[in-house]
Image (cartoon, rainbow, N blue to C red; front, side, top):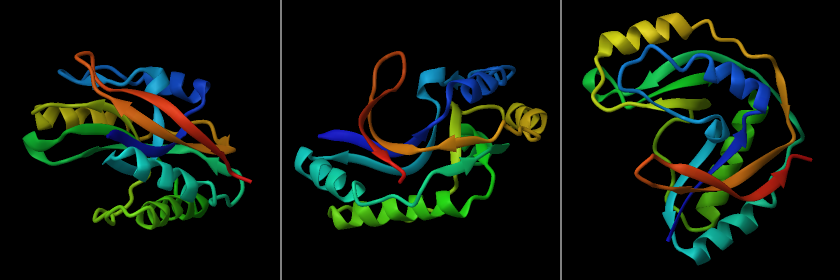
Length: 178
């Protein structure tokens, strides 16, 4: 079994802008620069043969390069159940189309449909039972986030590996957006 997701890597300079915002939130497990990405589709644990089928389906996606910009900040969960803070992504129909394509590819590979609405984001930190007031303050301080626009010319299929130090990701396959 392998744990997978599809994503667009955040360029190094944009990642540095995000790293500068990783402070003043007690108990946050901040993501390192190399782990910052815009999630397209969380796949989860799949067998190797299903991963191969998914890879084959993802090779059919394209749509051309995307002009993206990070925009705003927020959190997933409510109250003490808040489990992550994130940087948002400015509305982009091409990105939404690519995310839908990843969802369709996953279904064609035999995976169950996603039930949550797609929310383009880059996770900055994971939280465990935070003080909601601390999270609200962090969001308020970072809600005006606007990155430099950047061009995405590819997306990737990543594996996720858990360790005592947190999850780390490995690019398994890269797909050009042509």
